[in-house]
Length: 192
Image 1 (cartoon, rainbow, N blue to C red):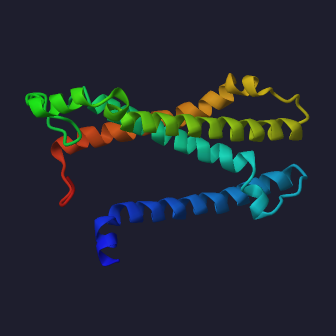
Image 2 (tube, helix red, strand yellow):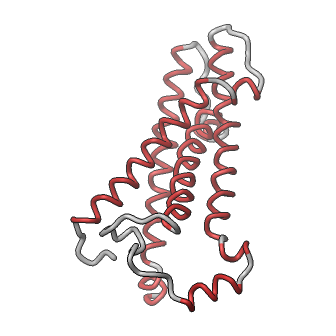
Image 3 (tube, rainbow, N blue to C red):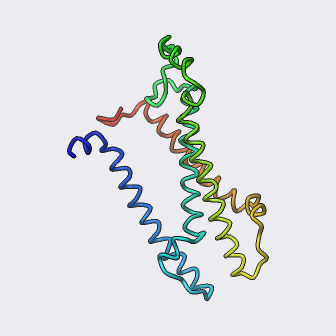
């Protein structure tokens, strides 16, 4: 067990942090949603019911979507673009080894690009979760205000949906830019 913890410590801690913060999102989101429901004279429902609402899944999908978009672009862009001096980039003056090129040619497209394709699939799944949850939540808000409901296509083309996406996407690329530029001059002891 000690070897498993040592060899997988990073993954284990990241999973635990993910679950902790997702639970925190669920608890605080439940309270925000319950307060909003009370303001509109609606019953707040149970915590279990909240976990099935568009409020919870729209926010969850929106965040996951931006993370997978960020990581997918990061993986693809770092495969052919450079940033001199950054630990996050290949060295522009160091050509790829012939052995690495031969290995790349000997494997199929799916194998060579499996990481970016997996991140694309995760992005698309999260995009669908965001769209579905956001659609449900937005129509609940419209119904509470006595407004006509949107179709799913109407929601996907609405400024509300794209505002939710763009506000997260821009922050993800800002964070990656900060990592790329800061690693040129700054270091963290023990981190590659």
